[in-house]
Length: 285
Image 1 (cartoon, rainbow, N blue to C red):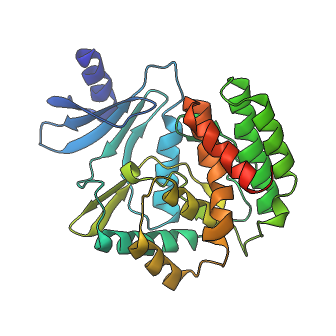
Image 2 (cartoon, rainbow, N blue to C red):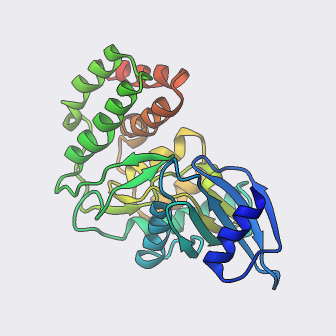
C-alpha cells in the first residue's frame, strides 16, 4: 500500500517522497504527512476511488485562496483520488488571542459578496454531497437545499424517522417566522468546528476542510457554537466588526444548527436524531 501511494505521489509531484506518516482526521480519505527529498513537508489525502472525489476539496481550497484572504493550504495537485497540499504548522487549541484573530478573519470572509446564494457548483460537507443551485433568496435556499435536502437524505438512509421528517417539513414551511433575509450573500467556510482550525502563537495559521457556498453568515456563527469551537473572545470581536442581530443566540442559532445536526444524523444517526427533535419541539413542532 505504501509503495502504491509513493508511486502515485511521484507521478503527481515529479519526485518521490522519502517518508510518509499517517495523520488523523480524514473522514473521506487517508491523510498523510509527506516528506520530499529536500525536506519540504506536504499533506496528502489519498482516496480509494470508491468514495467521494477529492477534486471537490481541492476546488474549494483554491476558491477560498482566490476569492478571500482566509489562510488555507495551497493546493499542489488535486484529482478524484489524490489531493496534495502544503503543510501548515499549528494545532487546534485556541486561546483568546487566536479566537480574536479568527473573528477578524471570518468577519473579512463574510464581507466577500456573491451574486446569489449557493455556488457555481455543488460541493461536499463531511463527505456528503452538498447541492448549491444558485438562489436569489436565502430562506428558500436554506429550506430546500439545506434542511429538506439533508432531511430527505437522512430519511432515505433510514437514519431519520419518518415522523421526525414530517415535523421538519411542517417547521420548514414557516421559516420566515424566525429568519430574515441578509443584505447580501456572504462567502462562508461552511464547516466551522475546532479540528478544522489551526493556530500557533495566538494566531490562526490555517482553516481546513471547507464546505463553501454563499449564505447568511449566521449559519457559520451557529455552526461554531454546536461543538463549542469559539467562546466569548471570538464573539466579542466579531460583533465589533459585524454586529450580530438580536435574536441570534436566543432563536436563530438553533434553527441554523439543524443543518449540521441533520448532516450528523445522515452520517451517524443515534443521539443526533434527539437533538433535531428537541429543536423542532422548542419551536412548536
